[in-house]
Image (cartoon, rainbow, N blue to C red; front, side, top):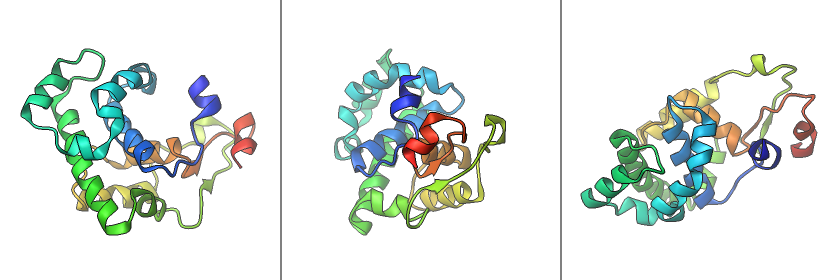
Length: 173
């Protein structure tokens, strides 16, 4: 509830926080978001506060250390994806000046503000999230399917998917 009331859907433009959400959304695949939120602090410690430069340098021994970390999702493919994504993230930063510039370019001038009356109307993916997924995959990212990309877009405020009756809908604007 606290995450919804204070964080979900608020536009994020800080590269470290964007990387954090990218890692967490990938870890969430097949699991509930509440499970990942409960593990968030453990992820911060395990992944050096989501510093992509540090994560990009992780080697086999660090992977084994992460696989032994009980406080995170111990899935070799998800951990490997987080490391590979850190490397791809750094390449995007090099090319665009920031990951923020690249990723927010998908929505143009600002957040998309939907007008859902009921949560059942909210899609799991959109044409835009499919486009983002293809773009990220071409750049070497993984665990970035269209549904993960859409959840990422919602989390970092690229899309305002609070229902119109939710108090956060107008607060976020």
